[in-house]
Amino acid sequence: MRAGSGGQVLTLDTLVRLRRGLRTPGTPRPLRLPVPEGMTVPLGCDAVAVPARLGPQVMSRLPRPGCVYADEAHWWWLVPADSDYALEWPAPAQYATGAVVPDAPVVPDLLHRPEGTVPYTPPIPLYLAVCRLTGTTPVWSRPVRA
Image (cartoon, rainbow, N blue to C red; front, side, top):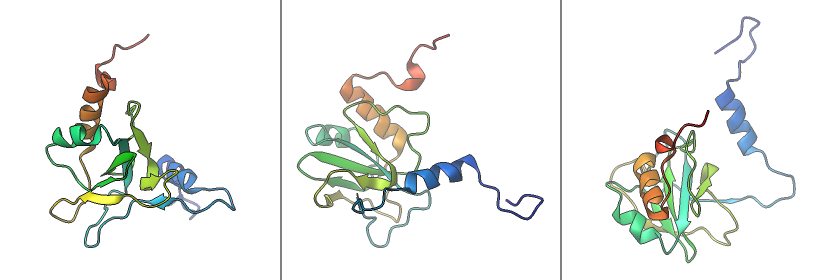
């Protein structure tokens, strides 16, 4: 989209993505969950982590899991970028913009790879599974406060 003056118009989505991409000089480059070879991420890529003790329970509740990574502490699911929009992922889940694995010494191992070329786990079934396991009411079911 171009403005009448010929300059580039930045949308709010673009500005949010630019802000998320900033980092402090001198900090090490964060580790990211890799997208397996032959797969594409047409919607960008974020990740959701749960403690390893909950991983198998979440996995068993998903009708179609995408790429799942695991280490001793967490299980990670790749989701489309901005899957945190209008959702409050319940603790102890962690939402990782850009599929960045915070505080990990190495990238977790790939535990599950779906068939096809898209690595995503659908975020709504994942969100509902995490809510159920944590005893959290989904945001759209909570009472509205005036």
